[in-house]
Length: 278
Image (cartoon, rainbow, N blue to C red; front, side, top):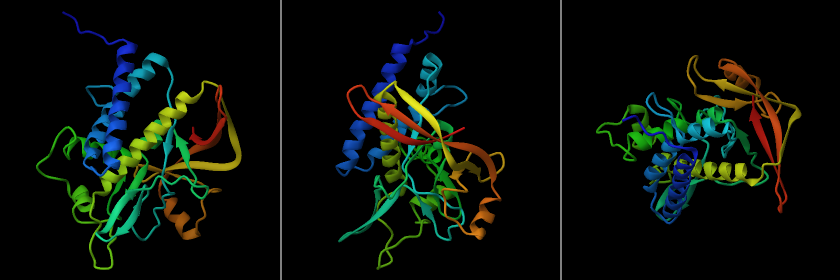
């Protein structure tokens, strides 16, 4: 008997199931159960990770519909010239029990939020402990595949052990104690929110207009030749010293364009976002 091929409706139902799983786990995470990050990572992996044997739900839907999404990046600007570690999605909170990481979901006017295509978003650097850089893909697959989401390894690679066990990020309280929770779990919470916000924007309206934001230059920098890890950079949008730019210039440059995309709802107002595209 030949294999059964799922139709679009079945694949889309699986997509919606994963969204529901993410929403439920976010509620549990926000109520104090940060281990829900393992379930969040597993759902995200099912939605977006391609392997040699399988195609993600996201790419299966693209094959059916021919439509992709743009993805919200709730991060600060990364600079490889920083002398201290970078953790672009988190904030620190001090309490009577010491320091802890919290999701930095602030979208105030002082924080510029960009949208990106999937590859740029998935492979964007969100941690740099000055020994190793980690992307969204790295964090999601570690938690899902190695840290109890869908599988638990008996040993942890040194690069991940440094960040989750030995505080390679480096922050401590006045007593020298490290933050009490797992920074990768907290980052998974932010990634989950980015996904939900991106899906909501995509569903907001089919009526959209995209135009170039003239006079604003954007690019992607790749930290190592042949690797996918990258970060957005700009000659017009980032304040930097000549020394910083000289470090950035060691990384491979690929051009991008900064767009404005406007979505006009049927009964709601207009949504306007900045989109880094090719």
